[in-house]
Each structure stands twice: as structure tokens, then as C-alpha cells.
Length: 320
Image (cartoon, rainbow, N blue to C red; front, side):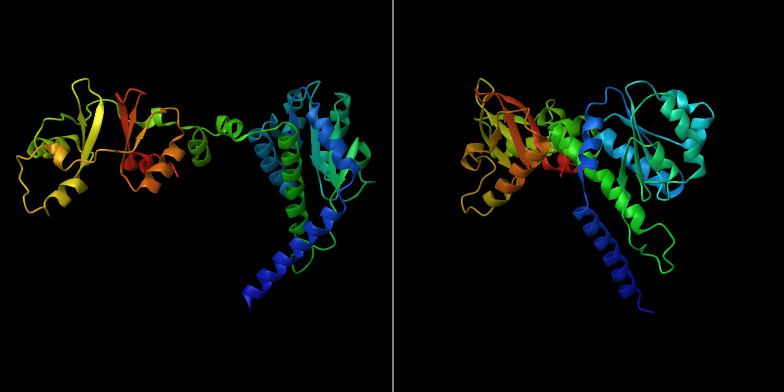
């Protein structure tokens, strides 16, 4: 049995379903977006079985992209959770057949709240279609499963239409990366969009030495500081150079090398610095990688050291 061919056929069927549905998007979709945009309350999504699983994912997507939303299971709704629906809300009901018993049983009660009901179903004349104020039709010619029964193409299309609604709402609200970061501060994307250099830089016990120090003193400072670098400062604690372990290795190749030499003889006199502690950590990582350095020194406009940011810290914190 050629599983690769089966997989390709499955994806092709579902892709054709999405392509066909894209051609059939009509004014009802626009109306649904406008209704949700005008919603003063919450967007509540309900459905059972596979439709319920899709609905839960849709609710999570809406909630994380600026539309307050949650998933309501029809069975739980019948046993008290209908109280979660209030004036000003909008409900999306999902049922491919439109005749899901559990969902159908709560539709009359939803209508009692006098809130807009958006149906997602294949059948406009179904129970869900009849109760809905508008219907986003699930147009599926064929399920991708070999017996044309298991929800595959239909769930894929429903999920994609939910994503399309979310994207429309994001663009209508001018939802930006900074907004997304505020909803995802702990995830990889949130770290990339939200964490600043000031949140990660080391400010205490920095390896500092005087510009008059010897190379030997600098090497001791590098070892004690455990950053692979020591910062060379003047009398006012302003950065004038730095010495890295790489600089020390290159110094060893000098014919006149001596541990008693002045540190400035081997130091980097124009080190890469950053004067903006509010710079995103992800942007700092780009700078570090472009300049092929390990340590970024953060200073004020007068070159006084505010802290340092090591590439290892960025990697440990999951900044990419």
C-alpha cells in the first residue's frame, strides 16, 4: 500500500475544498464580521463532537487576537452554563449537518437572549440554519476519508473559515505585533515581541578594570567575571575598550607578548555597544549575530555602563 499517495490524495482533496470555498465567499461573511466587530460583549462558540473541537480552537484564536471569546459546550449549557451568555454577546453555532441534537436543544434558549446567532453548517434549511440570523455555509463536495463519512474536509474548511474570520477582525482592528505580544508574554512569539534588553541584561558584579591595568589583571578579571570579557573603563567609569578571551588568545601570538603589558595594547577599542535598554531582546540577538560578538555592552549616552547582555542569556531565555 502506498501511504505517500494516500496522504497526497487526502491533502489534495482538502486543498480543493478550501480553494472551492474561497470562490464562494459571499456578503454573509462580511455581515458576520461586522456583527462580531460591533459586539460589546463576548464571542461565544458552541458545537459538539468534531465541530466542538474546531470551535474550541476557534475561540482560542479569537481570544488571542483581540476578540474576547470562549467555547461553550451545549451539554454544559443545558445544565447552567447558559448563564454565561448575556446581552451584547454574539454566538457562533457549528454543526456540519445542522441537526446536532445537543446543539439544537439549546438554540431556542439562545434566541431568548436576543443575541445574534451565526450558524456554520452545510444546510440552510436545517435546525441550526433556521434559528441562525445568518449562515456561513460549509460547502464540501467530498470528505477526504475513503468512505466519504469521517469529518475531514468539512472540519478543515470550518477551521479555515474560523481563521478567516479572525484575520478579518485583526485587520479591521489594526491588531499589531505589540498587541499580540501582550496576549502571549510567555510564549516564544511573546518573548520575541515583548522582552527587552533591560529585562535580561546583567547589571551587578560586572567585570570592570582600569585602563591602566595590566594584561595579567585583565585575565584575572575575565576569569572572575565568567562572561569571557572584561570591560575597561576610565576614571569616570566610562567604557573605553574591552578585552575578550579571543583578544587574549590573539595576544599570545605576538612575539613581544608579556603579561605585564598594558591591557589597552591588546584590547578592542571600538566595542559594539547599545544605548537603548528598551531595545527588543530579539533585535539585540540579531545585532550580536551580525557583529559576531558574544557580549553586548549597554551604556547611556555618556558611555557609562548600564549593563551587559550575553548571547548565552538570550539562548537560555528562548529568544530567537
